[in-house]
Image 1 (cartoon, rainbow, N blue to C red):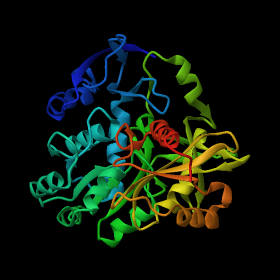
Image 2: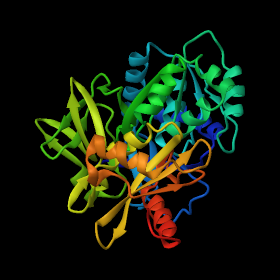
Image 3: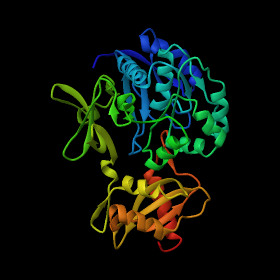
Image 4: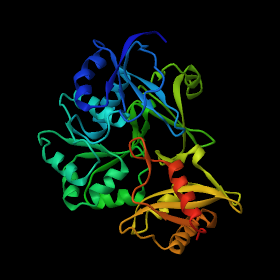
Length: 387
């Protein structure tokens, strides 16, 4: 790669980024890397980047090891244009996500390329009343868009006034983590126009909407259910990590592909993401799909959010545990959940314990932290035998 463009670190603040983004996109200024102020910088990264780079996004991934993803201006523009085409044209955007993650950065990029600065939600934790107030400040002359993670959507739907504000959007993109069918049904029943997105930093954010790839993007699922993606939205690579480039980006059938760590399948032309390849649990010698279990548990009327994990067990190898957030703080009856899951997925998938928490541990913009959730489950098991 030709490396001759300066890289500038900027605080993860929407105002600073909005001032510098136009020059980063058109090449008249340095490329930008927005750093989370709460995360130590660590070793000094390279100060120059490949020609054509606009943004460098630091991501920890599921392993917790940081990596810098190089995003070219052409890829960011292609992603923004494909999103506008899919949603029905350029519009006004509300920024409700942190801008050191690709989903928040893409709201800024889409808004700037549409010719309208985004309205930025106030700092601090996401709250329904803050969302409602921010929506009131949006103009009505153009379509309204925003991006949320599932946890934020839950909070919006739990508040009647915020739900009313959400109805005024022409589309609310929901991604960053799997969105349960129950949550989607709840949003659509409330009249909220939700579009599920699938993608990652290496694809400039979401590149598959409601299971259908954006224009120019192709999806492939191999015999092992690994999802691969290609198209003009792909990242240039990883900064200073040619080893990762070689294993993650491959050339096949005359095109450059991103080999993801996700499992999926294509049904009636739509991609269904089944979870990560390394998330599969083995309980009693039987493979258990945690995301499938989550979909069943989430259907319980008192469950608002759920993360299914495996904890070590001397008899089963891994014990299936459901870590849940409930509407009233009380644990749903374990036997009810076991019966529902066993009927849908088989007895090996039925959780053997339910752990109730005030909020799921998260990493990144709304992704459940399965490792942290598993630690919580182990701690609760230490207090008493599993049910």
